[in-house]
Amino acid sequence: MRALLVCAAAALLFVPGAHGGDLGAQLYGAGCITCHGPEGRGIADRGPSLRGAGARAADFYLRTGYMPLASPHTQPDRSRVLFSQRELAALVAYVASLAPGPRIPTPHPARGNLAEGQEQFTEHCAGCHQIVAEGGYVTNAVAPPLKHAGPVEIAEAVRTGPYLMPRFSAQQITDAQLDSIIRYVIYAKHPDDRGGWALGHLGPVPEGLVTWFVGIVLLVATCLVIGRRLHP
Image 1 (cartoon, rainbow, N blue to C red):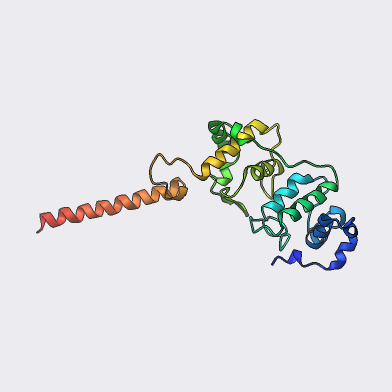
Image 2: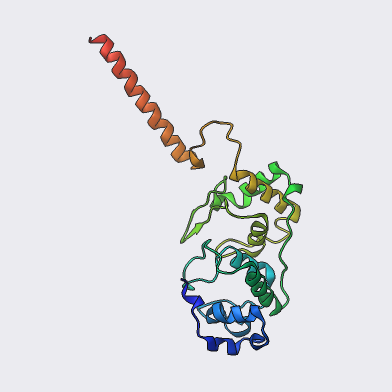
């Protein structure tokens, strides 16, 4: 289990509201205070301040299992969520109460345009996540695949910018464009492979290598058949 969940019960003494039966404050004291400090003020070299992060960032990091981390120096990765829905809602509400911050977004992918979504995803996202959202590698990090990401999580990630991902404001990507991007990501989970065998959507380089390999095998087999006919 993750080390950050094993904290001394005395940590609750430093969390406002913990003695009043505030579930969110109690969970914060048990799983977050070690890195983010009392009242979410942050601790140098361990965790940033959560004041002003709002429900949006808290919901994203907790709902995806990105937090809590075993070590503050490792890249957050999608993992099993350690909280029930009730606990998650309480913890998000507690973080949101520390200071005013962004709310959880409400995207509408059904209103989006698939073609525009592909265009926007290609421009802003495909460089790291690949065109079919299968994820990829960047300098000192991994861009995760998006096959398990839901509409709300995608919207939260775009507006929050988790880890090395840039944060896109409404001026850079409008809400309407974000709806289109989400619609495209949903489509990319089960794309219409009109070209035939998709080979797991590995990309043009491995797909090209497979094509060459198949072609060479067929060429060698053809040469052997012709050779046997010429020299019975």
